[in-house]
Image (cartoon, rainbow, N blue to C red; front, side):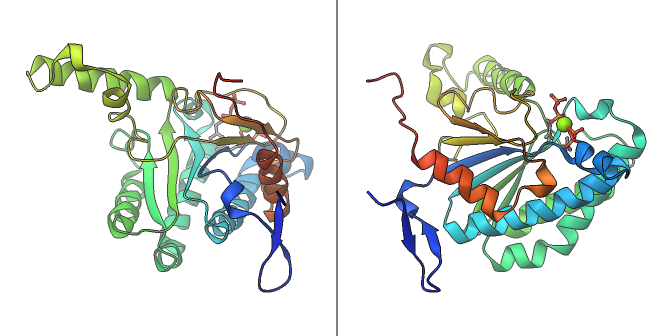
Length: 251
Ligand code: IPE
Ligand code: IPE
Ligand code: MG
């Protein structure tokens, strides 16, 4: 089967039926990108937001159903107050400036991670995130999930705790706990399986991202630093995905 078709403008386009339904991305390398330019790390994060904007738009254009991006891990609080502040500031700016456009494009925004429990001083950011989710919750376009104060282990423990509580309250029978019920307590409950996981900047590790959900995802890593990850680099990754042979334990 041909991997490419042509769109109405005559340019090459990836065949929609071969694309992953759900893409997850670890956006990594902002700091190194800035350091290479003799600039502070926050400069890299700013450039990283621009890259994110392009990748969201392109995912939407390609008709990808769900995109989950790793924006801030539960471990990223270890960074300097200055860097954390810059990251949170950029996030607030993004969700206030881009919200109208994302909404117009029917993007449904969800934050995955523990945003109820953010340190003091981030109330404005928190509010912007709740607003973005509330405003776009009925949208039927791209399902955009932003992992923020997210940790895969925390997510699994949280699900276990929720089920334990329900069992204790007599809402569920512990014997009835199966994968489906467990998955219903994860942040990704109503999303399709993650098919494809991209990590930029050459690191080959999960860094506590979607530990449960990536069980059968195809992994892709590139040395490109996140701020340089553009539409073309994304297409290249997606093309590689279309050539993978997914067996899911079969032959
Ligand atoms: C990824 O870039 C962005 C976040 C973690 C928020 P980094 O800031 O980790 O950049 P490097 O890995 O230090 O280059
Ligand atoms: C993972 O990147 C987190 C995000 C991209 C948000 P890190 O840069 O924090 O991961 P490590 O520390 O290299 O594993
Ligand atoms: Mg990093």
